[in-house]
Length: 90
Image (cartoon, rainbow, N blue to C red; front, side, top):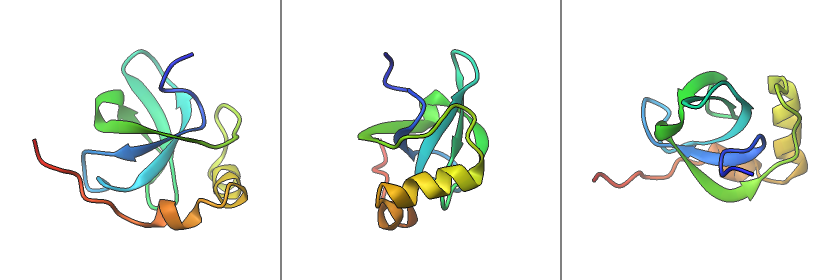
């Protein structure tokens, strides 16, 4: 059981979508994950560029974007996924 499990909610820390919440849809290999979200496009991302949080949602491996949206709504996390948080600079 890893911190980077399918369905784990994360915050994107790098790139133009930094600060938005996303969810892990699939594990590609030891360095890359497939993420998706309401404000984050479905894409492959390096695990160093996301920060997992304690929340998770119930989705199956490789879930389509519509299934991810429905799972977010079912978990009542729409507001969280639409807001942007500030990432502190190191």
